[in-house]
Length: 265
Image (cartoon, rainbow, N blue to C red):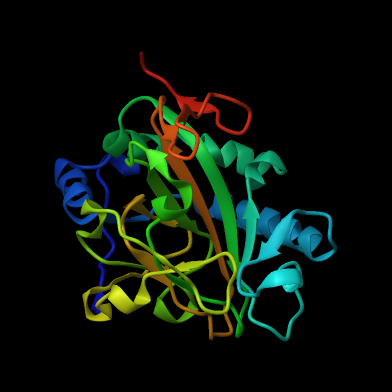
């Protein structure tokens, strides 16, 4: 596999260079590097841990994507865990504030444009030793949004590499949608593994507080966490106003769950 080098953004991470924007649209992803300050990283780690502690006690709507059927809410220590907390920003003020983080929105504006609406966000936790994988997939195979131009910011609160679940991308795979199969062993995950050449994968190593961006049709995955380190990640998914659901052909209206994060009309 290739190893992706961290790309240093210009202007104190407030905006991307023209070269970075061109690279995003050519490859379907961009490794931006560290964006969050150390003090904020420490705050978000504490909030993240507190929320998932509440999840384990049954006080938060978290599910384990690594298991099937009736066991998908079992967060025990023996089985693989891939814990998903949807819309964590609606439950925690620190995550709500992070959704409006100026540096993040500056970066998103450079690839998506000046009018930015939240599609959703999700915290995805891989515990040490038995953190489950996410298989090769395109996000819009789940979402089915039109136009298919949503952009995701994947943010880690821990140092990440291949072995504890760093993001992996297939360059250029965003140029067309693909038909996905149901992942073996999971009722909720899709899998394109049989059709993906792993040798083309770019592994996006990141320091804590670092981000990657990817297009909603870019093939990506994360490996299991087999290390003694945590992998605490947050994905924020952005869209432009007027985006529709292909399931209903209705516009995703501005709402509490889908707020306008920035508008420059």
